[in-house]
Amino acid sequence: MAEKKIPMRMCIACKEMKPKRELLRIVKSGEEISLDLTGKKNGRGAYICDNPECIARLKKQKLLNKVFSTAVDDEVYAKIEEEFLARKN
Image 1 (tube, rainbow, N blue to C red):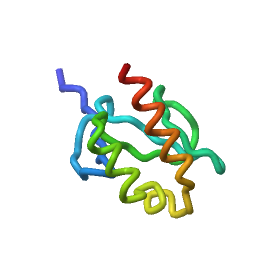
Image 2 (cartoon, one colour):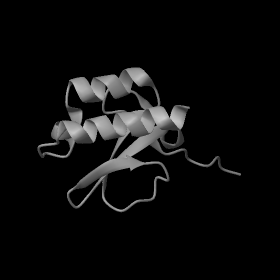
Image 3 (cartoon, helix red, strand yellow):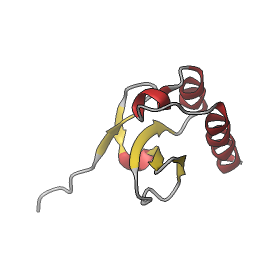
Image 4 (cartoon, rainbow, N blue to C red):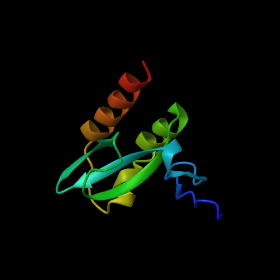
């Protein structure tokens, strides 16, 4: 029996390829950008590692601006960081 293929995605911060289940999805749906904990929200998605270093790099380098080709407010970065920290506790 053939092995089931594991979907791989690249972290936008560290550029490492990892299994999709190990990464967090950030989704842009319309004008709203948020953390997608279910992985099933509609919209354009980007993936980031589930570690504080990548979250810090996301905010510092404003990576969502590049990925979604739009201006992203600092409030959005703060909200994503807040949701990440709340999920860890």
